[in-house]
Length: 282
Image 1: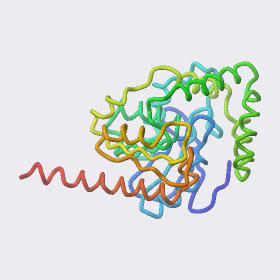
Image 2: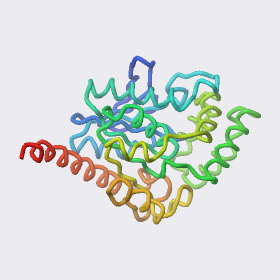
Image 3: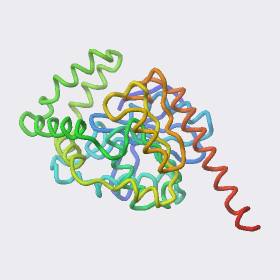
Image 4: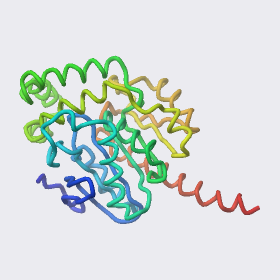
């Protein structure tokens, strides 16, 4: 498995829904970080030591069939409900019965969103990174193309796309090429197709009581404009965090600023929870 710098450790997490490859760091309130389509747990590598230093137990996981997690070659195995239950199983294991803060990048936010809607009490807070949760025509067109390319040619159908990304981010070339070869074709097809289908409504989460914070790069041209993020954030009573100098992968482009936004959010959530009993007692 990929070796990351201390204090991050690689583990194989055993849950009641199977095994998940994970990177973990720190101790304290649990945080589960979920990657997007064509991503992996390594997309959170710069964040993990920062979250650990702030007193959190951070766990970044590969979805079933993604990179180093085992999974099916059958695309029909990857439904939104099944992948959401996987996230809840991870939370149940690492949280030991306590809720976890949930962080998810891009397409992974749709899965995390479904998990939060399915079982709100398991989610202490939710922070989508580079995702408006609703999807867009641009995203749907991209994901449809990916699924069709893999169905026709296997993972090789996405090689030119990954090579293009490598040219813009050569430091991660080995990782991007490696995880394309290790991720199951069933995952590559099934995850893309489920994201083009119905998703949990944002209104369902807004009524669940789960605190939410949108974090995005100012230069992210893939998912939405800063104005769109602010409109979405108002439904949850918090401003979106727009990170200067960051694109779609805000956690990689500006890990320090992303970590600070998350930690500040979680501390505010904890403070809000402490105030509620006192208010009820008066």
